[in-house]
Length: 340
Image 1 (cartoon, helix red, strand yellow):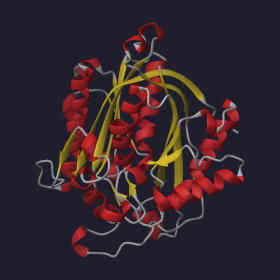
Image 2: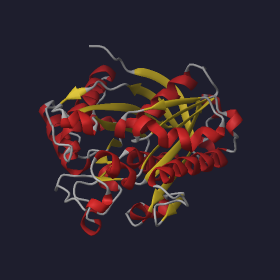
Image 3: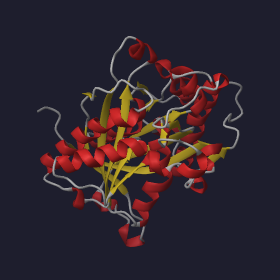
Image 4: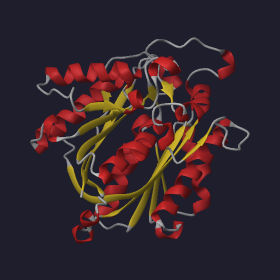
């Protein structure tokens, strides 16, 4: 069974979140660093709007970290658009060595995992991880343009308009600031997910397609590290939504793990399901990115959370693959984050 847990010593020392109007009106709206109620961010097209979200997010993170683009040795970035153009066009002006990624909704964890490994092994001093999604650009690419007015299935999830940026550096114990009451969010372990085929062919039910991938990664991690759900304050998935979260909890119980008391999902946290009419919850690369940056990392640094698992899931499919009768494949990458 390949793909072992990899130990890391990396600190997420700065992050930023940029979101749209629907996200601002949700339960976490006041926590985001920047919001645009009209979702355009000053741009004429939805794709340019998504690129601008990434540019804004990285600029804010750099300002928070009090560093310049020249200080960053590598930039890992991705989005949902063809050839990851949202990232390339949004970030090219920073002049940072760039690695484009595609992990669908798992891209936030994927980029953070790679950035953490790079700084832990001293391949560079600082690395950045950036990802985004935009409801309007994703609908146009994966389903139908908004003007079409298509009916959404009850299990369908709402693509989050948002971008998250994270700055990562090697962690040194002697620099711990617990004495001042300011904790650090340190990535201790990572586990790369394996692509899973759950047999689901319905693109409007991605939660069901992604839950088995989360199951595989979680069970592998627990077995190798000899930990249990009770070891953690929070097991955070993203973005299974309501449907996928229920499936994951049932599957985990069948494997002997009860995660009910410690599990939450970014797709369930980002919107108010009753008042915002999002059906299955939130999804998209930006969903887990903005929730982690705006809500979870601050709680870790304040001491409200001490040890968590962050597990982002992605549906690896395209409109053409579905038309050709392929199933919705999925992958889930994991990071163990602790407060120091």
